[in-house]
Length: 295
View 1: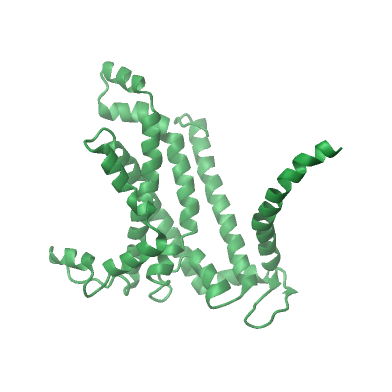
View 2: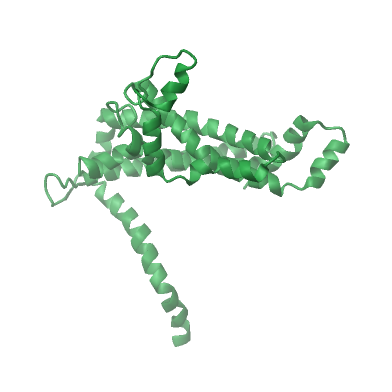
């Protein structure tokens, strides 16, 4: 009997840590989303059913935050995937490959706080290097952080700069694992570099690209740090991402834990739906005979 308990006792500290750091916060979020839990008004809570969820469609800032998050997801992520794949192919076999490869990883390694401050300086209206560079081509000064449209574009540019190296690293690692014999055999058969890419390399990289896409979708929905460090959601609510709005409702200004929890549950549901939709589309393509590998 004691010999059976020993393994459980050895695992118990890790199990307790896992439950306290993951399961408990998740369960608390679900519980709080059904309650009137506003610390700015009172410490007591009471059950209000789905009222917090019904409030979301009526919340203009929540809707605008969701729209900008969708815009960021639909523009930044495809650009990151395309650039990551393209750069990986260009870097492979180039002169100074190791130095170039290391240089491309710098944006991903820079802490979010540092990159946020740096980009805030780069976007400065009066003396920012971005406006100075554009002025060389006759472009007038742009209020990158003061104009609604340019502020959104600025956040998209930062996201692409920060996360394209992540996609590049995954695809580059995948390219290194492709057997050279397959590529050589295709070239012997008369295939040019385009056919080698389409019929040999891309099919083998497709599962890896899918993984990169799924991870970027999840991360993009959670975008918070670059908004926090550059625009603080402004001007107005133009650059509020959904995650940043949850922070403002639950911690920064609102202290409305119940409503913030409901917003968080909705974000979780949307993330799960989008990820499952990607996998469904891949399976559908495979069933229709368009190729594709299952993970």
